Image 1: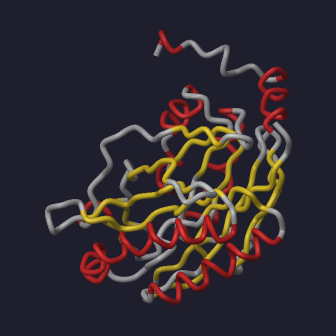
Image 2: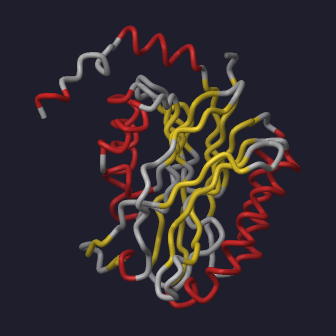
Length: 273
């Protein structure tokens, strides 16, 4: 397959969905103009605000997000990942955190509901309890064949700390791992790039990691640094801390070369563990 350009978008989402959709389209258009064929939006691209409001808006947001992704994919003729948005879970108290991958013709190619929930008390004083308002997904993350491009595996943010998830994706044929995130500034400064490079190196796969950046509301601050990383662990593009995009070429033949040079996937001994 020939090279193609992939874009990991970076946003500073707010509690106002219309503003967020406009900001997202601006970055999608810029990435498409630069030739990107696969574009990823970060986790929480349509809304970052308090839990009560997110739950109240979840039904409308779920519909708006799905329609937005279809419209953008068709308008700019790209494959587009909506990296995570709230979807009612059916009980009125919790939502799912869902990502959807949409093709150039607007067809839904796959979806994934976040499995690992971020329940952490950070030393900077911020507390996160995703399980209080989000229901964990119960299905394995999918691997999706994008004809003419590559095979991609889906995940979301906190999943990056669980390497067995990515072993499943690569075992199912993934050549590129999508890791959209809203990584906290406190953990991101020490762990974000290291974790992304580790997932790329140990799985000899590309990583496309869209990200939130900057201050959202209250004390919530995201790390930024959306990235594209190659199967050797080399950072091909880094969006820094401003809204924008990390854009880089994806070469599936490079995946094959790296896996021949470093055949660690073939050397695994899963029966011993």
